[in-house]
Length: 119
Image (tube, rainbow, N blue to C red):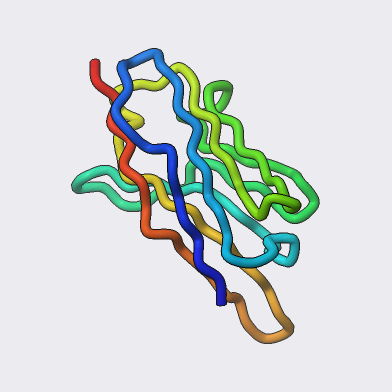
C-alpha cells in the first residue's frame, strides 16, 4: 500500500504557472508508471501527463509544450510544472501510480488538488 498526497493547487490567472507535487508514503522507484490526471466538473477524468519507470514521458495534446512532468525517486515525489495556464485547465488534479506484478496491476490515487485558472 501507498498513500499519495498532492499539493500545490490553487487559484491563478490565465498565463500564470503552478507546480503540483505528489509525495508518496514509500519509495516510488518500483512504480512502473506515475502520472497526473484531471477531472473538470461534468467531464470524465483524463490523463494529463505520465512518466514511466525509465523516465519516458507522455502528455495530453492539450498540455504539450506547457506542462512538464518529472519524477524524483530520492524524494519520493512526482511533480507537474504547469506554465501558460488557461481557464480550460481548471480541474481537480489527481496523482496516480501503477505497479505491475506477475498477475496483477495495482493502481493508487491521491485525494486530488484543485486548480482554478481565472480569465
